[in-house]
Amino acid sequence: MSLDGAFLHTVKSELIYEGLINSRVEKIHQPSREEIVLSLHTKNGGKKLLISANPASARVCLTEKTPENPSVPPMFCQLLRKRLGNGRLTEITQDGFERIIFFKFLCRNEIGDEENIILSAEIMGRSSNIVLLINQSEELNIKVIDAIKRVTDEVSSVRRVLPGLAYELPPKEKRLSLLDFTKQELMNELQSHTHERLDKALIKIFEGVCPLFAREAAFVASGLTDIPIVELNVESTERLYKFLEKARTILKSADGSGNTKPFMLISRDKKPFDFTFVGIKQYSGEMTVVPYSSANILLDTFYAERANTERLKQRSGAMLKTLNNRYERVLRKIDARRGDLAACDEREKLRKWGDLINANIYAVKKGESSFTARDYTADGEPVKIPLDPKLSPQQNAQKYYNEYKKLRIAQNTLTGLIKDGEEELKYLESVLDAASRASGDSELLEIKQELIETGYISGIRGKDTTAKSGKKPPKQDRPSEPLKFKSSDNTVILVGRNNRQNDVLTLKTAKPDEYWLHTKDIAGSHVIVRSAAPTEKTLEEAAEIAAWFSKAKNSSRVPVDYTRVRYVKKPSGAKPGMVIFTHNKTLYVTPREEILNERNFSE
Image (cartoon, rainbow, N blue to C red; front, side):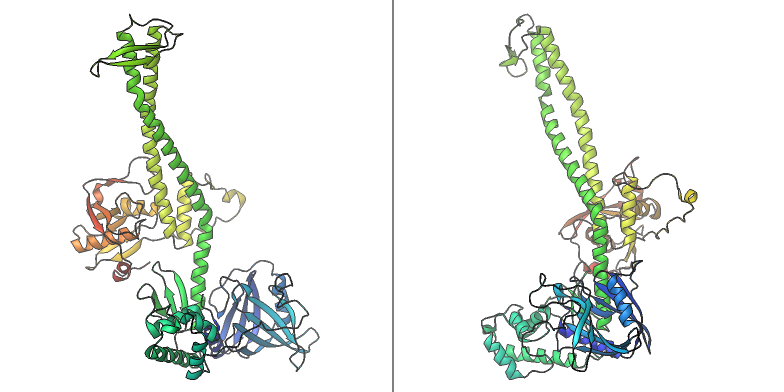
């Protein structure tokens, strides 16, 4: 992630602009092991300052979110309440472009004396930390009160962070500042790194810049993100200097008033990918670059989306594991049954042997282990038939007839079991596909309920016991709505999010003369075109949407079946989302992400 020192500088500037200086601490919460939230009262109203030392989401920013807090506050939270409670925030500083912000408070201790308490937010990846400090004299005798993560000798031999120790800044190298450098200094530094890639060298040359910024600088200079410094010419070097000058101007004017706008990169699957304080061009349309009015709003949005994605991933993990295990088990059973079915092909040979023994019953003698007869069905070729010496000729013939009947019954049974297994695989693929596209808790809950009803996972079923227990029934989430699109001629197109919704959409919502679409033999959503006479263009766009919301979203020339809703039926006893259809035709389309935006996608 790109929460580098330069971006942190814009965050700090916005915090000051938002009026946090001279604000009062009203509440302190610690919603998770590595995260705290300070509720501050400013002249502009209440503000919530979030500080996270989680390596995956370390940041400092204002937040609008209201995280759920534990019933018993952790020890560090209790300490913060004791030392910072009702304190006044007097200063927010940053050491150059280092990834550390200091929040200085004027507080009163238990006996009423004033104390200078400092909260150090160290945003440094795996080494991120939140440290509570006290300045005990004018000589900057700063000592550690405690930290959200204590650092002992076993953790780091370079820098310990423990109660009572003097506070030391992390070691740093001398580098240029984006706020204050000359062209000659830049040229000298490039010359000293002449055998390196430009983007790698820029990270070493400048303080507080991230790989994304460095690659963008190289791209603006040369059109390549990985160009070696030795390949730079005069023109590309000049473009590099102008880009860095522009970045300096942005950072100097980043006062929180909205004069500058940070940017978030959104991947093709609509997930937050990265962010920076300058515009990005290096991805050439592979990423969507979205400007934000505030660095704080960007960070709050970015990490909230990532946290939501991670939470959904964790919540769906056990369910997906169960489904995948069941899928693999069914697949193994089908393979084994196909092997057994292949063995059933021997049954006709057994029947023929029985017939040949009966046809030559006079020539077969009891006690023989084999008998050779001419095959009347194969141009009289001799056939050697194994015999059980303990059985009479009639009994040997009957034995082969019995084995023949067993294999014939087994073949019918195995054929049915294989068909059932293949249908189950289709169903499991459809659930896995829907779960992979779930974008919220309500969708996951619907899928979970479907799996409970179909018996794939355990759940509470039967009578409602809440009335007897006196407890209030749990609040039910509002069912999710189908995804909605409009074609180029404003025809409404609906897309089911999961199997239960597919059933409702196809069997209840859609009218008989409207059109139904689904990827051919590929797990995906049911798509309904709400028109009895759609244009070819609308059908093609609906087919693209159907292909996008399927397992084949990253493929080309995806086959999509379409027919009128009246020809779509649900067999008795079929699992959710499983239907049969007739009178269908097939379109071949290549799904495009652009179709979602072009067709006014709305949730």
